[in-house]
Length: 332
Ligand SMILES: [Zn+2]
Ligand SMILES: [Zn+2]
Ligand SMILES: [Zn+2]
Image (cartoon, rainbow, N blue to C red; front, side, top):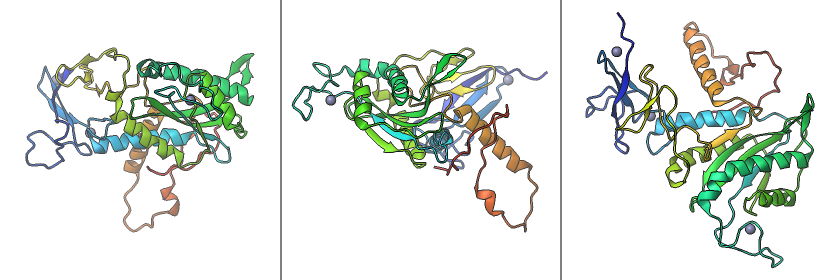
C-alpha cells in the first residue's frame, strides 16, 4: 500500500551559509534554483525530499527572492493598460516631530508629540482604504451596478519601510473607466492629511517601468519586515508550526509556508484591487502553464526561432470576459 505521508521539516540550510547544487560540503540533496532548500521527511515511511525555500527575502535566498520579485512585477504590470493615463502616487507617514508649513502654520499632518509609529503602521492599510475611497469620489470615477456604488479607481500598492520603521506607499493607480486620472497635488495632499498620512506626497504620470520599480520595493520591505511591528500570525488550517524552523508545514501534502511570506491584515508588502489585473495565484499558474506548453512542444533543431517568440501573450480569462489590451511585460 502506498504511504499517505506525514511530512515534517527535518532540515533547513542556515541563513548566511548558502549551499549551491553540487557543493561537496553538503550531505543533503541540493535543490536547483534555491540557496536555502528545505528537507522534508515522512514520519511514517522515512521518504525524504528537498524543496525550494520560496522565500521573498533576498538575504535568505537570492534565487527564490528573484522569482518572487519577478512575480510581483508581473502582478503589478498586469494592471497597466495601453493608452490609459494613470497615476504613480507616493504617500508617506506623518512626521516624527511637529513641523511648520511654508505659511508658518503648524502642519496638520503630525499630531502633538509626533506620530506613534506602531499604532500608525497597524492602521495604515485602513487609512489607505479610506483615502482611496475618497480619492475615487473626488475624481467622480465611481460607478453604479444594480444601484450599488463601485469604486472607480483600481490600484497596485507596494509598501516601503523607511529607516525610522514607518511605512511608505508607492501606488500604481488608474480609473476603471479608462479616462485619465486628473487631480491636483494639493487635493491629494489634503486627502492624505485628512486620512492620517504625511503632508509629503508625490504624483507622477504612470509609466510601464513603475511595475518593476515597485516590485523592488516589495522585495526590500520583505527583507525589512522584522523591523516593522505588526500583529502575530495565526497558523492556517491543516498546517502546524515546525518548532525548529518556525515554518508552517502541512503534514498531509508536505506543503511548506513561510509565515513571513504570508500577508497579514496590518502589514502587507503589497496589495492590489481585485479589478487591477492578474493576481499572484494567476501569475503562478500562467508560468506553470507556460513551462508545460514549452515542454510539450516538439524539438526541432534547425527551425529558425520566430521573432514573436520573445513576446509573451497574456491569456484571456477562462470565463471569456473581455479584457483591455495589456502592456507587454518584460522580465524584471
Ligand atoms: Zn510516507
Ligand atoms: Zn530558496
Ligand atoms: Zn506635515
